[in-house]
Image 1 (spheres, rainbow, N blue to C red):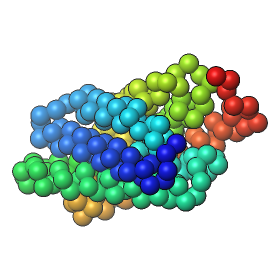
Image 2: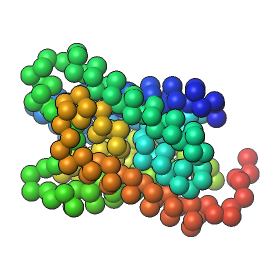
Image 3: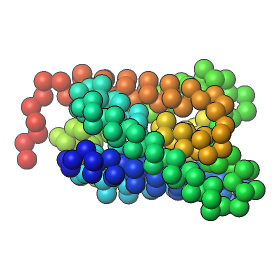
Length: 229
């Protein structure tokens, strides 16, 4: 792992890319130019690439919920976790505001700036649970591939994590946006100044991420020796 400063830069760039591409895809979808599969693939592909690029620098976290889950399980020191979370949120803001600057105002506004939103008839409690469960799958995949290097897929963690993002969005995107990431909500929310149901995309992902991290660590990693090369 690189220094905290270099890791923070990597997290900023990776999260910037996720929001710029992911929120951009949502805006296209809202304007009838891209379907749900396209939105899911845009998120999954950009995350897979960014995780693969930054994994050896910052761990390729790209998500405050992932950073928090690693901190809770003792895999990330407090100071480093704080710096990476700030970098992730800053990258999300930069990506969202660049979209706002580049796109026609009408397209940007119709798409709600690419921010995740609740689908018709979805209660807040159910939305929080959806975000928690989808983030559980994501963080479980992170621990199973990027944290636990005993398995055969540790070298392809980026692809695995990106595919989880894609299938979560395909299944639950219409209900909550399937953000699975407080930064994915925060950047577009700030760019549009729309804080509706903000706790859905904070409580859900953080809770789901912590549960997944603690479960994987306590059942599969606790007291385990480092993998043999």
